[in-house]
Image 1: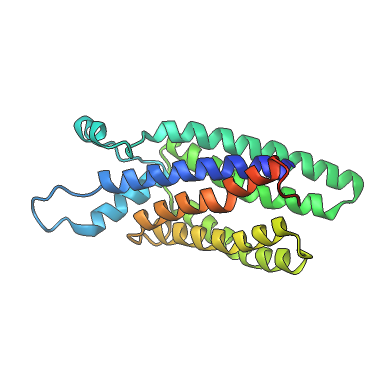
Image 2 (image 1 turned 90 degrees about the vertical axis):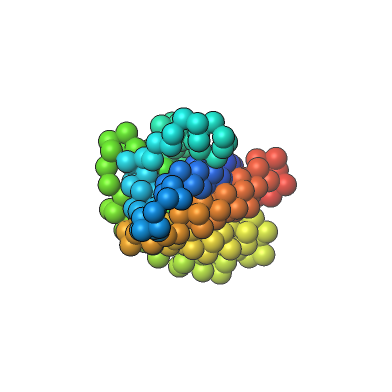
Length: 219
């Protein structure tokens, strides 16, 4: 049940982060004047935005698009979601340690991967930090997600919730891999990352968490 709470908030806020990222990509587009500025400038500005140095669009442009969300608005959501994840992960880790329950410890460890992601993005925005280190952390999460998905599917035992969760790990590996390409390698994939965050936030986390919390599915 606690995992359902985490998934609900992770999914909702991941979708909002996707909207924010698409807005940042649009705001970072150079004006249609000289043709020289090009994609490199857009790529660097959006990477800096995710890392902490946000793109602040002109007020008139901000008023025209609901996709342009201020960085610190998103940071508040990320801090709250990261805090919820940390609290629930600590509960699971303590319970698992006391009872010798490896499943609870494993769940707490996996939740911290997500919680730390949200907290890092949020604090980068407040501290005006770069995003390259976070990009390499995303690669670590992406690599970790693949065996996590294999393990979950191998031990699902036909449980629909666990099968859904196992498939989700592969989707999350793709998403975190795209963030690695955006932040660590400065590839022009900001819009792709934004759309993936929206779609995966809804389908892999929010919908599964909601189904668990209303009792339609159980782990």
